[in-house]
Image 1 (cartoon, rainbow, N blue to C red):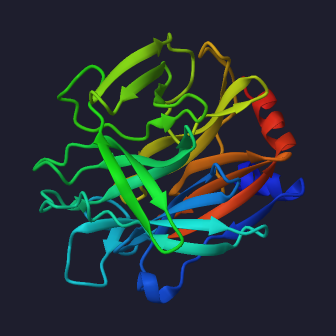
Image 2: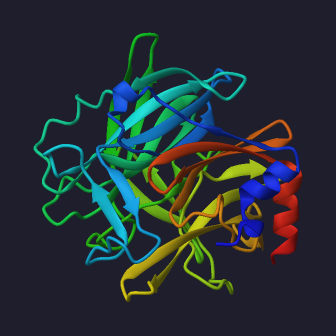
Length: 331
């Protein structure tokens, strides 16, 4: 992987910085912290949601320890072979260190026996709509075939606890039998709207009251080299909309096994949802498995949160000029 094309290198060369997001080891038993998301709440605090899983993700870069399905292997430290996810609410101080943390209590709605191996709300984006705090991600444990559906949950954070106070399982806007809906990007200044697809751009509006979902904008496909998948929230920037998306390059390893590399790119829309610019693809920190699901603008910098190799959570401070340059270098 070419480090010269990594976002972290460009950020650091232009005055940015990188910060690990760490929870005490006694709370995680050494298992993975991954795919953090970030927002600024209605009180101006930096809030991060961190995905915690009950396994570690082993990636064999060479020929050793190849699994029949590829070089990516789940390692469990316990007998429970479900792949479980919990979400941790965190507040950051002015130095981007975690100053307060609490596991989100989901017991009000987790009253069923999971029916699939993947348990919990995965890759949850955190954001505010109408001054309320939400997380939204994919859940696959309510069906026997692992059918994934996006869910929207309102979160209440008090001094003593953080709890889920509502949950809405979002139906697909078109095909009710689609297998997996995931990586929808919430639009921060348009309550109850998501960018469902980036290319072609499809914007949907959800209604928790009548449990509906409808497409409000659908644009023509433009010439992009790969399937563009969702990433961060969609944020307003310079009278446009900006998001950090991802794509997955699938290939066969040197011993003929399935492998993948994650890449990202910035996409810029006008207010009518026409793509006006997109960057070249890039890695974040030159790893195989990198995934960003959080971005917020603070002063003249972007704060980008991402998971590395599905085991570590980071915050990357990216100067605004870097994003501008990368968009101008693209198309």
